[in-house]
Image 1 (cartoon, rainbow over the protein chains, first blue to last red):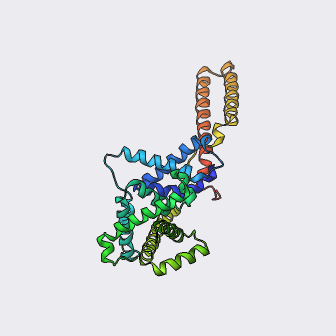
Image 2 (cartoon, rainbow over the protein chains, first blue to last red; image 1 turned 180 degrees about the vertical axis):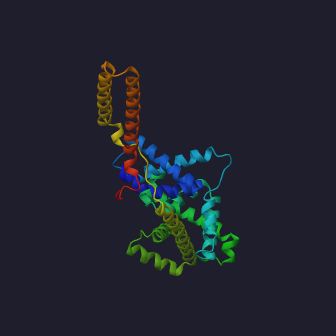
Image 3 (cartoon, each protein chain N blue to C red; image 1 turned 120 degrees about the vertical axis):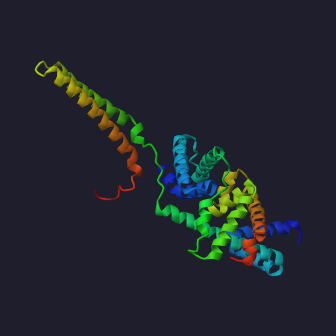
Length: 166
Length: 147
């Protein structure tokens, strides 16, 4: 399991930083999740894929941390701030910031399936494992989530000014 | 087109965007989007979205690659009987030496007390350092570097 955990850490970091926003706190959350996973390794069914199981622990750790914050901080403020810099193109940066804003406005279940596919890069089977639903439901929910996100993006002034393209 | 047909193409669009589509499905979707402007526009916006989020994800992966995260786990060695046996043996050996020193009438009493105190502290420090080294060994970022 130690190797599985090691391999899972970059993806866990992405999940944590997407929920918590702060890179340093996200690193701490990943370490906390790794220790929790290690402590409860006897509960892991080795016949099932490792990452969906570990992702749920990471997600719970992040939500616990969000709950004790004095106020709700929306995701990845640091990452958005960095995206706004001119280092790799203002339009691409604006587009990424617009996607970020649009995702923050989505209801949690809608946002989560997008996070799982776009940022965790999970297959449909793995998403089904995390969400506890059939594979076909994953695809139809993903379609609805993407459509909702695309509609929010169309209404974003930064994207409309840019002509809705990349 | 019925709603059932439309659901079918929604699924094909998801597979296309995510790269899970096979050749027959791709041809079917291509034929459909040639005629259906709505699906064509949707497919384009989903593909643009995926391109943007892929770039965002890559930036996060680059961040973590610059300063890799290693799980800091308590190692098995600490929890095993082997480590406990090592601690017991060290305590017994030091206790035996301590007893010899304590019962030796040739050594002045003040020196006996001093030696036993120094030995006890030294043993505690040694075991603690050993425990920390064993715990840190799997996650030591410099373990590949020759010392």
